[in-house]
Length: 250
Length: 269
Image (cartoon, rainbow over all chains, first blue to last red; front, side, top):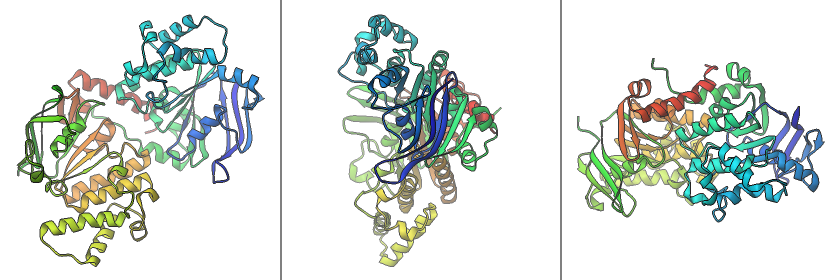
């Protein structure tokens, strides 16, 4: 089943140069999608379009077959509950003046979800392996990795079908990074992930499908296995060749 | 041959709390040494202590010999001459090293003129201009004549880091300290800058102290590596030893994590 479809989507900021050209992509339930590109490739703009934070200059975006229209408030309420996001910087994305419980409960409150909020928060905290006592504390009491867990708890509290994650491990240390990967892997058993990242290794650990972006165009898309084992486009080949890896010393 | 840098039992305190404890390392001409560790491991502080630039409020003890000169406890005027002669440093964010209001060519020229003054040479304006262009070509900046007139904001991230490297080279240092020099760059640009550093260090027979959190990047840049954790040295050795047969559990964890990402894309190669 397709969750979000982009058809011939282009985007320009104001009247300046286009940053996205003719993007066709489909996000299917149960298949994690990785959107990989370097700076200026347009990956953040795609994410804004997928979140309904911007409207395409041309082309169509549909959520479950219905046009995604940020002006349709009723439609957007259902959309927000189904599609949540996690951002790169766990320091700026959490309100320092709110307790963790209130931060996590925010989507439930703003979307008027009729549920036992305390129970939902406790369940979300347990899902990201944070102790229940975390609920009464403030963000500054947590490390970067723990903050990213709080941000993930907030994203999953409304039980969305889709979680969009923008460079979620880029600001984290390697050992923390691998633990967040494990967490995302267990979450993806119940929700579909779209990972936007410059890091093809991170994306490859979690995604069945890949989209490779270069300068606002999709240069290659398909199953991660095919693209990684036989990249067709010269840019994908260069990206893979440039990614440093540890030599095999055995 | 005397070491370019010899650190013995370096300890750094801030408000009586130790941030780095008992770190020792030595580096000779032509040697490439890496310092790896996660945030808060003390790798950047160790490098700053080596050039006598620790932030205010921090105190260092132990011994740091930079080109034979003791840095710890030395007066600023005694070590200022070493920076840019015995040692040059490039940082993660080239914008912090570049003056936003000065053309790139002029910034490189300033270093060249300072070097000439130091050596007691007089140089003509034309000589300096020619050497600026030669250095820019040396770090593979495209169209040096045009870019020499550019301001930092008119250049890409990779070009700025190349310009910062050109400035570091302009002072002909015997030791280059590179602190996360490619972390802010895209992977394709990172690969180019790493290759450039390797060539320059080999051809100029410089010593290289390369600091990074990224194991594969360090593996590509150096021959010997030291692993820091919470201010302490946990393991050191040749790259093949430390990454191939890590002994300390912390290093084992790092290598295992790095390999997990490698394996995910490894099918391709």
